[in-house]
Each structure stands twice: as structure tokens, then as C-alpha cells.
Image (cartoon, rainbow, N blue to C red; front, side, top):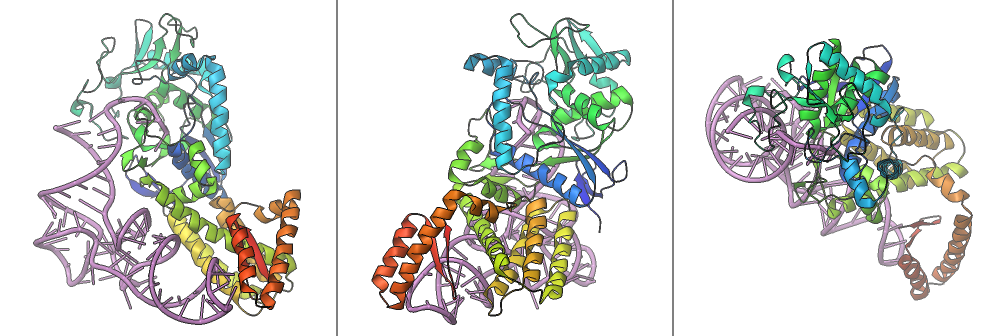
Length: 487
RNA sequence: GGCGGCAUGGCCAAGUGGACUAAGGCAGCGGAUUGCAAAUCCGUUAUCCUGGGUUCGAAUCCCAGUGCCGCCUCCA
């Protein structure tokens, strides 16, 4: 059983083998930090977070690089228009780098809440200007690029394989269909490597061609190769970047050093809202901060993982509510296991459960090995949960041995790999001072209520339960205990 | 105009030639449990967009049609 990855380059699932045994270098296109992250970022970065987590689970030493674009991304298209950062900075009356800091923090803040692990390296485009200039020089020297009026363009006609990722042929494209053809270019499909800074442009650097700034595609080539070598194992990003962004990355990288740029190209599909693509420029995007007001970040994560990364998902309150209920069910069982663990003892039945869980591990790996089928992986978790609930409801008490086997299963498969099971949910909660007070108060009420129940004073005992329910506290009368939880 | 993708129960969503008499979640219904609830468990709800074809056998492959979506401007 081996991990298979759908490679956009070959349009099929391939068995994954890294270039260097035991090590994986992965580069994922990061955000342009000029606004708060939205639900689309969540899908993309949760998907790749799980890819990285699963590769690590399989034993690979992974280096995960995800850039921060803080210059060169223009409003109209890759080669014209205003710099997005500069434009927004003017609007908010701050320095461009101040804006970048602001939204970079916002980005990491949201990603942390989604329980995405931080990349190992988060290089910034502005921190790699000399390297980018070097690559442009190399491309000019090799005849793949030309200077025109202090800008430098990549000559796509010189790179025979241009189009191999996206399946596009230059002659079939309707050039200038949607954007004006830039007269500086020899061929309309040529793309900017370096742009001259027009008067008033703030973010600019000196170069052999005059003051200017790097083209958008350039940073990814430069930074990925700098930290992962000339050939990456995996390059990931959103499907909308296949063309032109990734196609251009391949062209400039492979033209420069005549080596394959990336061995596996992975692209995640898009998030739609009401069936329509969500885009920054369309204005219909849902920011994560808004989503988090209604749903917990882990619910958003669950929602994303419930669909394969290459399928689109439609964001709606109904769908998120469904995800929330499902996630809570899972969480409840895990909490119950952890609660029982504290007071349990012995090890009866441990072997039986080890064998059971072994089977589920097999199921989990089998489905994840099929191009990271996280929806299938969640199904395995629910199948385990059904069986665990049986155990929890049975008359004989589960032993400590069994419960800790189950707990570690959830920690590894629900926690380490899928990231939807908080590490220490119970312990953290119980360490909080407020929690202790809250717990004693509710338990005091529950005791009183139980006395009322014993004397069959249903009206009063129900009133207590209803009042607590109004406050978001759910009371469950189990056979031998009363438990409470927040809704 | 060119390129690509998708269409599975009320909703979401796996599965992509034989163990599918189609996973899992949400919602519903019936039952167990409960003083009533909650939680949990059990049962129940699909022949896979339409029409052809290939095959011993198709949700899964091919052809045609219909519908939806993405890319060819920036976007994760």
C-alpha cells in the first residue's frame, strides 16, 4: 500500500516517491497579504496542512515552504496595473510594509485557529530581491528573456514546453481576449520577469535595468529553489493558478537550470458561495473572521476536510451547521473517553481493542493513500466512534488499557493527522480556574435537582434543566452519573 | 472561441469496471433507553443526470445530449 498523488502534470494518480529517500520538499503558494484571509484560503491551506501532516505520519522528514507575497502582485493582471499592496496601503494610509505586517499577522492568526501547522519556512518576496534579479540575469544570458524599455520579459516562444502543465497551446489562445496586448512584448503571452517602476511607485529596487520590481511569478521559482533545491518534490496551490502562474514558474525555472522544476503538482479546487466562485475581486468572499463568529474554526476545518481537496465545496450556513453537529458528536465521544480514562483501571480487553483499532488504522491509511481522501478518513473516525459509544454504554466498565488505546487512536488520527481533535481539550478546560468554579456550581445544581427527581418533583427538576439549557448548559442524566457540557 | 472539471438518497459527500445488495455526515421516521428529555445504540430512506453502446459484468469505460462550474485578467 503506497501513497498515491494526483499529479496535474500527468493528469493521473501516481505512486509518490520523493527525490531523496525519506525526505520531502513541498512548496505551496502562499497568500498575497493585502486583506484578511477568507474561506478559500482555509480550503487551500487546510488541505496542504493535512498533506504535510500525513507525509510526516508516514515517516518522511518534510520541509514545508509557503511564501508570503508582499510585492509584485498587480491588480489587473500579472504584467500591468497597480501593485495590490501599494494600492491598499494608500487606501489605508499606511506604509506598504506596515500593511503587509498587519495582514500577515491576520493570516497567521486565522491559520493558527484553524489548527494549521506553521510552515517551516515562510519566505517573503521582498526578502529575496537579489536572488530574483540573478534569475532574470541568467534567463537573459541564456536567451530566454529580453529587456524592453527597462522591463524584462520571458520569451515564451523560446521555451518549447510552455503549456505542458495547463494543456494550453499558445496558438490556440485568443490573445488579448480579455486584456490589452502590451506593445512592449514580442509575443502577447510573454510574461514580465522584472517591471520598471513608474513615477510615484514606492516599492522598487535598483537593478541592472533600472529601478523596478519583480514580476509575480518570479518569487515562487526563486524562493522554492533556494530552500528546496532545483527540483521540488511537491508544488501545491489553488487550481486557478495552474495558468498562468504555475505554467510561468515552470518555464522560467526549467529554462534557467534545465532540470525538472517540480515532480508532483497538486492543485486544490475552489470554494463557491451560493454556487458562484468566490473571489476577492467579486466581493462575495467570506472572511474567516466572519465565519468564526458563527462557527468554531475546527468546524470550518471539519467542513473542508469532509470534501476531497480536488472537489469544489459550496459554503453555506446550512452546510456548516451540519458539519458542526457532526464534529460535536465526535468531540463528545472523545471527551467522554478522556473523562472515563481518569477514573478507570486495569487492562482487560486491551488486546481485542488493539486488534480492532489496527483494522481501522488500515482503513484510514488505505483511504488517505488514495490521494489524501480526507472524507474517507473522517468516515473511518465515525465508524470507530460508533463502536466506542457502544463500549461506553455497555454495562461492564471499560478498562484503562482499552480507553488509553482508544484515546491515542483519536490523538494520532483525529489529532496529529486531521487536526480536528484538540490535543488536550479536556485537560486544558479543567485546568482553568473559571472552569472549576463553573463545574462546582453546576454540580451543586445537579445534586439539588437529583434530590428533587428522587422525590419525583418533575416540574421543579425540569425547570432547573431548562434554565441551564437556556444558558447553554446541557444536562445529561446517564445511568449512574450526571454529566454536563456546553452547547 | 479555446482548454478543463463536475452531475450519486431530502441536503452534504466517498466510491471511478466484479466483495456496490453504493461509505460516512446532516435532516426525517420507527424502535430501545429515560419520569419526560438529552446523549447513545438499533432499524429505515438511492440503482448512481438522460439516451445509446462496449463487456459475462458499469455509478465506474465509450458516444451523443442536457445542466452546472472553473481557467484563458488578479485570486487559495
